[in-house]
Amino acid sequence: MKKILLAALVLAAALSCQQAPDKGKNTVPVVGFADAFVDNTIGQARVGFMDALQKNGFDEKKGTLKVEYRNAQGDIPTLTQIIKYFIAEKVDVLATCPTLPTITALQNTKTIPVCMMVAPTPEIMKINDAHGNPPTNLFGTGENLDYIDTSFLLIQKIVKPTVGKLNIGMVYNQSEPQSVDAMERIKQLANANNINLVALPVNSSSEVQLVTSSLLSKNLDAFFANPDNTIFASFETIVKNCDKAHVPVFTSEAGLVQRGAVAAYGADIYQWGYQAGEQAAKYLQSKDSTLLKWQLVTLRKKVYNAAAAKKYGLTIPNTFQAIQ
Image: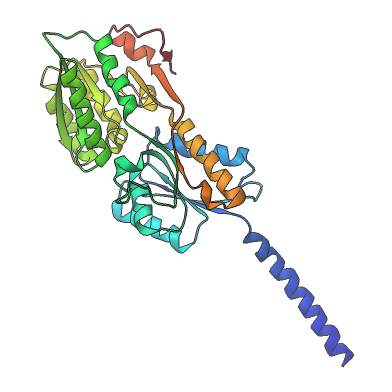
């Protein structure tokens, strides 16, 4: 009988030791990060996001955080599968970058916190309810369209028209609400400032080459890179075609200046992700649902590409910072 009791105690102790690590693992928060496509500029947001988490004590290497990363490679069905997988895994936070993963996540869960970045405001994404309130599980960092005014009108200060009014071209993705909204805003700006805007729609990045070539045949003085995902994914194609036609490219995204645009006034993508990461860290520290409130991106920069400006003989205002 003593031997049986001793064996039972040993077995109970062994089971207790086996269960302890599992219980510990369950205390480590899990972040599911969903990216829509591969892009060097937008990818800086994830770097900033992870840096902010690490600074606040959430570090995979130290075992204080688990991150599951998935990239949809531009495929919408794959993106939906990724979001549903994260929901099934019951991640603590679903981080989304840029717009489409955010919308897809909010369409599929009302309970798991969704931390957005490189996305417009909920109003522009058209995800607010009938009373104008955003989803209760949405937080992170978004952007309105006010900064586009400064970026677009900058062209008028730098580029002189070949003949008559300044002729500016742009392409926009007619299937992305924020892209259409930005185009409409730019159209109004152009009309109010005696600028001739030539805008053509695209449905995917595969159409950008053909549409941009068609646009460049219209005697453009400059090209404006609208802030949408298709532009990000096809930017090198746009710059290559514009360079051949000797048409300078301007944009509202600081990251695109590094990739060949002349100048921009817009959010720093790394800092955008960092700001979202700080919000995610605060939530993970407390799991306080009152922290689930989105913010406007706070850091915007005026930057220019010295090589691109020199190529076109353009003088940039001294308030702009040269970017490497």
